[in-house]
Amino acid sequence: MTSTETLSLRWETLTADAVPAWTELTNVLAEYDDTGEYYSAEDLAEELGEHGFTAERDSWAVWDGDCLVAYGKVSVGLIPDHEARTRCTLEGGVRPSHRGRGIGSALLTRMEARALELARERHPGVPAYWRFDGGQEGASVRALAAHRGYGIVRYFAELERPLPGHELSGHESVPEGITLLSPAAENEEATRRAHNEAFQDHWGSGEMTVERWHDFWTARANRWDLSTLAVDADGNVLAYALAGSWVERELYVLLVGSVRAARGRGLATASLARMIRLARESGHFDAVDLHVDSDSPTGATRLYEKLGFVTTRVFATLQRDAG
Image 1 (tube, one colour):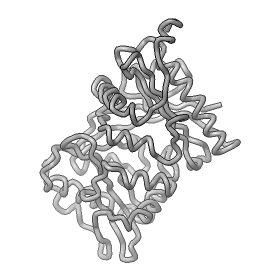
Image 2 (cartoon, rainbow, N blue to C red):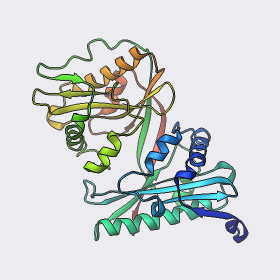
Image 3 (cartoon, one colour):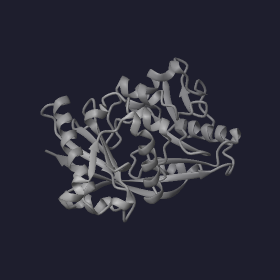
């Protein structure tokens, strides 16, 4: 990018006023890069108020005149991950018409610097790493990432199950003393504890704090009416399948898990099967989608395939040690 081109761009931060343009750009990227990650203005506006995120310092909006041509935002763990390291998540994108001009590189430089600064503020002396989504094979971001020293550390598969699809009779069976129910406000903390315990042995996971879990639990896109908890007689959450919806007629599986002591009892399968049945009976959805770690320690991909899911896309996760 020449200095003249650089000066023609206006670097600001994401604000409430920028949300409509941010939404338009996000959905252009979803279509062009075939990510399926479509969002409404209401959903993106929620992100500006998340705990631990300060838009004035942790985001960028790059304008070419009145057109938003790129955006970026960083998120740094409030507590170290299970490997006692600080995860710095970078997110962003450049409008296809403006790629190849150095905007992505300049944006990445700013995101890395801010994320590392924030990591050192929150967790002095703790090793940190930068991570972001590398898209599908051939994604333009991979060349930039490789040039900057990032490597592929994991693959995640997107799976889809059509509705109505085949019947899942028998899969909702649970042992005596276990109840399947839809989440309510009073289940928030019990589900957070279950999730943190369930994901302790999952790659790259970190404990969800009360604040960040509340952001997640209260998001407008959640469909708790179609979600399921497997609860014992004492009210402990042993397994869960939580859903949301951003795209019309598509239900997205946000999280599925079982506490380790309850694994092997079919509780996650039963929870997900109930979700699928409720989605089918609602008549409002044509498909159920999810993403899964290709190397999940619980063999989650096999569970999903048993319930009729098939792989539709494969995405890479890119990572580099920071500092």
